[in-house]
Length: 166
Image 1 (cartoon, rainbow, N blue to C red):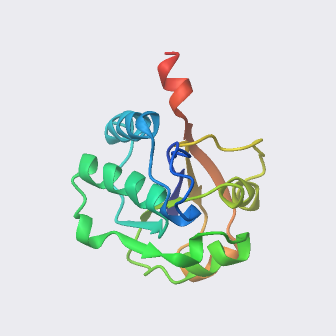
Image 2: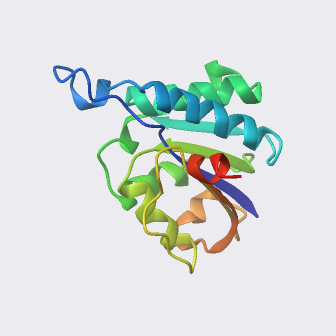
Image 3: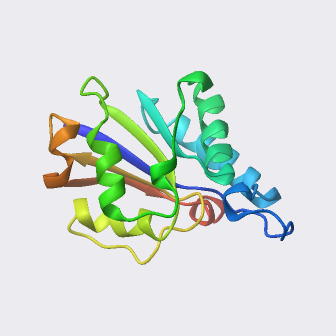
């Protein structure tokens, strides 16, 4: 059994129109939501063995906030350009290369692909993962190399608005 946490990056800023999309930073709400979600998860899940993030600034910033909250060494955060502007097959390729010693994996990336990959593993579907949403899945595999045939169960699904309404 492997556990996969998919995290959509927090809300980004559109105020600097001259920046390339990959360089867009988080906005104030994004920073707040990333702190809220990471602090909530700190008490709900085991700290991931490995964190992988898209190389886009907004995803990397979200991942760094989670890493610091979890006490995860930021130098171990892996940046993966293959998770930016991509498709489900690219996510599966990245996941298939994860070492088998990793039991709990957290991946920070982008919509629409991050929402599209959830029903690939689970019977249930979701409309769209909101910014800074986290989907945790227990996958019935022993090796990440078997990810393309993995099926599993939802372990948790949280998003900022849900927590703010509690």
